[in-house]
Image 1 (tube, rainbow, N blue to C red):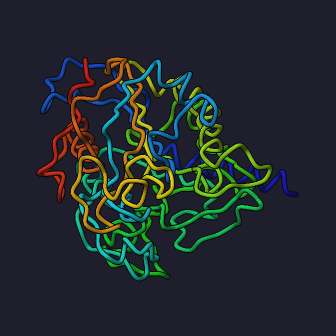
Image 2 (cartoon, rainbow, N blue to C red; image 1 turned 135 degrees about the horizontal axis):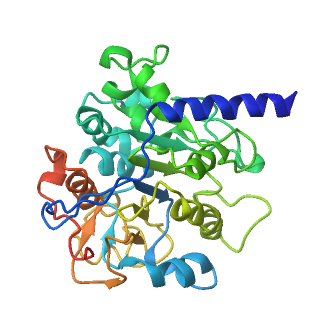
Length: 350
């Protein structure tokens, strides 16, 4: 019975995906916008609570020894604040609230504000938020547990905090979520342990949207340390990348202008890598009088035929820069919130 239900769930997920799916976008000689090329299909993976200094061959061997040598690797990239939710909101709307800094649920912290998902809708650019271990589309409550390797935490799901995405007719509702949200904010797999089967199946066929936001569960994003214990929580995200990144790069959807971006929401307060509550009182590049002002120096890398391989250390960038870069790469306007004043990520492109 369980196998039958799993097969049925997989079929339904593929049907949903097919409705907004986009094969690899053919490369075009489009002019760059602010130095950013036209993107094909984009895959943005976000991990948790890690400083750049925590990336090494011992604790994160896949990142340090396999991905870094083939990527554009930024050394001065920063989260914008603490805690998690505010950073996810910042990278998708260019702002955040004090409520979101407190990591409260969408019933308390939802906003009627322009956001990246709404911009993509308006531009008729397909997108999905793939949420590992989410029990159903557009789920608004935490579910699962780290001890069973299937913890879903809604504070890492930015899309359900926006009225125009979550709510039917643009009115946020705990009981009447929109068809838009149900179709685009979807489980990446079943609620079994560390399951990404729906996303993996879409990759294998190449039928994925133009923009794919990929959020692992609380074990695989490095937030919690889960059984059987790896050397560190960061190692769990490293293993997630080892499993999923090759599937992304091998997918027919990636193509010659596909873009894979891997970053983290914020730095940890104990790594001593410049996080706002680390061994230094503030980020080295930011004047931060309080804990909430500095988000930490987090890893950031891009793998794409559009990008140069190497270490880039000339400029300071943050989640607002990422948002502006995505807006340029998809040729959508206006720049949202603080993205309007941010510098896009430009030095890494060919």
